[in-house]
Image (cartoon, rainbow, N blue to C red; front, side, top):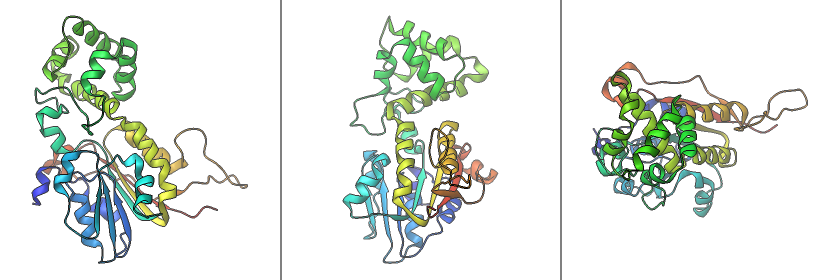
Length: 305
């Protein structure tokens, strides 16, 4: 096992790397560096003229930086992919890999506040320099905004009741710890569903804190300019909101409205899907339970007609 696998075990490693159809002298981007598992696998397939650029906004990921002249770590959100590649004088690349969601390291450090398992401060910022934290969300958002957030990002049917419970609890004391948030929500958490509901509530707050859906959408819409014709994208999602964005982008080339059509009524899209949806094997899930909800979609950049 690579020592960095304790930081984050890469999910669908072989499938996502194979999906890139790596060229030895190609230029690639891993937009979610984390523990560097996917990046190391890409580098192992590159020749001496190949290049790999990796993005990660979490300062902790810099500890996993790979000592390789072909490798560059960019400590920024992947929504700035085009801007930072230009800074490094890279106009287009042969492939982009993204493994979205939270790294095992972020879940396992109590003070980061991502996990329902630990009683840490409610933080949830992937970039700890950013102003908005989970504490800010649960203590300062009004009831309507909280309800919208839980309904949209947590896909929770009782979003209004959850928002009401949080607002009621914080009238007596601020919510600064995970245990306090869970205490506020206790009446709404039946024992048999407690873990699932808490996971959805934490997910909703985390997505809001990090602007995850907006960042994903901005990233996807830059890919037609960033990826060369014949290049591949290999994207792993963990919840239905992310996967819907990725699926729709590959199918329609956009995220809202109807796709553009040519004179003959054929949809004009920048990418065509390669194969079908790929999910982890039972064996991978048994070895890494966090892989259970992963969905991999692969697509190839096609020439504009």
